[in-house]
Length: 113
Image 1 (cartoon, rainbow, N blue to C red):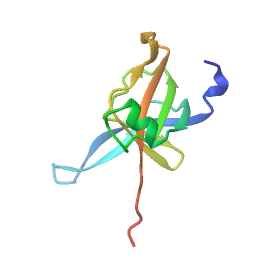
Image 2: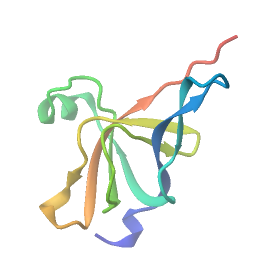
Image 3: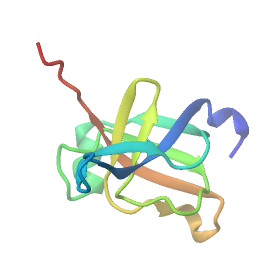
């Protein structure tokens, strides 16, 4: 795949518990896992999600990145001010450690007024 394909800059995020100041754990926060990476992000239609995956109606994007070790389905992806939840294990495309294919759902944040 050519470098022009990877035109978006993303970060992988991992969950970490923050201390509550009294020796316990507070709420989980999402922190970057490594440096930014370049990615190709494609919105997919509901029809594709139904035909290719069992998780109907939830997959919203297909994301490709050059191979990054340690990426799991417990992580999120940060793209600008948007976040995506990784659905299922990332696929090591062609099992060659060159590219990961990630199916993800965009997380909608609702403002509290």
